[in-house]
Length: 191
Image (cartoon, helix red, strand yellow):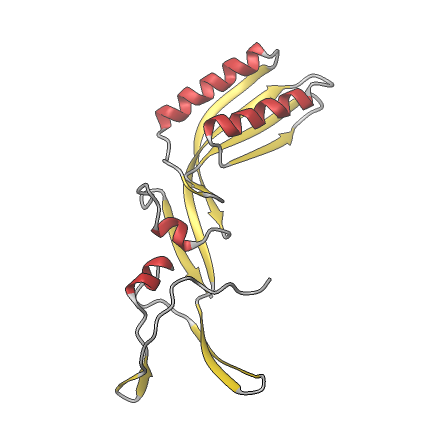
């Protein structure tokens, strides 16, 4: 996949600091990429000839890694033969209705499905308001009720916290978030 240029562009001048030459990163760009003082990076000299020679510097920051603390509703559900399609469509309805950020299934026996429903704040489309434990418990009870109405047997239900790692989120998603997520999200650049 090719690189995509950022929308923040600036003009600057190279300055001297002791025996080194330095450039300044404007605050808009450092905020957009969530840069911190002391952060490591790699600089590559780049050039191309077509027909004139052009040169540049690429500052490589590495991989943007996020650890998010999320609530997970884990349910063990008895699903009879031939009703997995119905079960799957109900879970997809839950995803839309309750803004679930992930769903994971594991079939532990021929009729029992272990389901994990993730209530995070970070999505591919942006940041949503983080839910409290009480909200997640209430939603999980509503889900259990709906599943029972549809003829499924909920054998176990628990709410737990997990820390999940994400590597596909743009830093601008966090820096421009409409909600405060610093209590549930930690990030770093890794070379």
